Image (cartoon, rainbow, N blue to C red; front, side):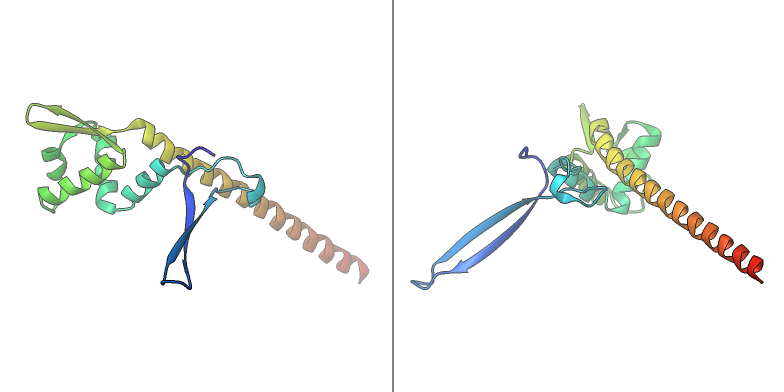
Length: 166
């Protein structure tokens, strides 16, 4: 598995009997999301370390609003972005920094201005992750519809047989 995939890491501390020595054992377990819930045969994980940072970054409502602004209005300066909020420019600057560090935003420096735009590569990762879940839930709802229809047909047939028997 490539090193950039998200891994669930468990750290166990073991206390030694001599001199109170501690040993640390780190277990690294590959983590993946599987549509069939059969993790032994799952493909490579959908979430990578980089995209995990992006998901953490877009978890905040202000940062999601910044993303929406940039998606609808294109590239904007920090001043233009902060004019859309009721919090101070320093708070917006911190949000922009988080989004930049998570590789959600790209920044271009022009003289004294920083112009922010969305990083399309990261947004594709987020969209693909959401698409996988949309497909999974769509398939689950289709299965539920088929099950409910079969049950409805079964009840209808049962009712007809009862009426014919009377």
